[in-house]
Image (cartoon, rainbow, N blue to C red; front, side, top):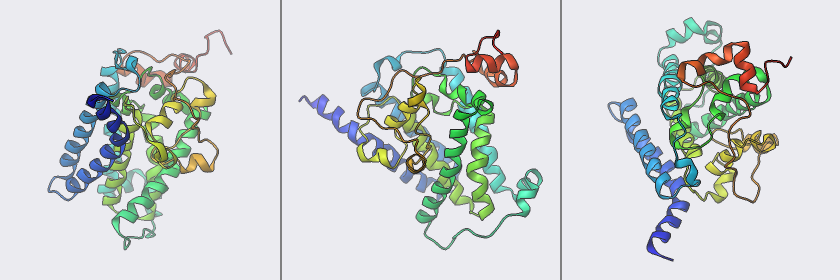
Length: 304
């Protein structure tokens, strides 16, 4: 085995834990700094850049390195849609009065149930697990009902997976997921640092699940949502694609029978059978028109 091959093999086994745990270490220093949000964005950008380089050195699928014409649009959804929605969700935690005005009935129901005396690592693990329950069902519902699929299909319309299209979500899809995953934590009285750490875990696992890197994740596949599992989830074949709904953890996939991890290379035949509009704004408005929904679900205009 040549030195280059040995390095590639080592990176295949080490890149997932390296990016994830170094990312969390960077998040720790960011959150304890004078400028936590800005510092975290720098750490996150560094992780994205590292995966971008790894995609070119040890790609899972060579063809996914070729342009698909959707890079600018995917960046738009990441920065202008998912990013703004996440900031809005964070703002609702930082500014209780804003939360009270928008979610007044829920604000009145806020309970002091959060175990704030526990070590932060335990609180974060608890928060990730509670949020995952909401994320799992939001994701599963989005696949199993046409009303929500009309928004979620945008994420699945890509024909290649790579780190840039991690945040390619419709704003309505992101809001639905945040509502089901973060409102329970808010009602329980979780403090702001817990939300920061939840966002950090979700951010790093998100770029890892979508990256085009040949990662050997082995036992991690039974705990975390990994690139291998998520490629199956993006498969065009419904029996393969309607599986592995977990965003961070796969515990609920295992509990509710949607875990899928056959002993063969995960799918590269990804995408949807419907059609998504071209361009950022058309993609935002498409799910709100009758013809747009027909296009998304792949139904002819002549069909009833």
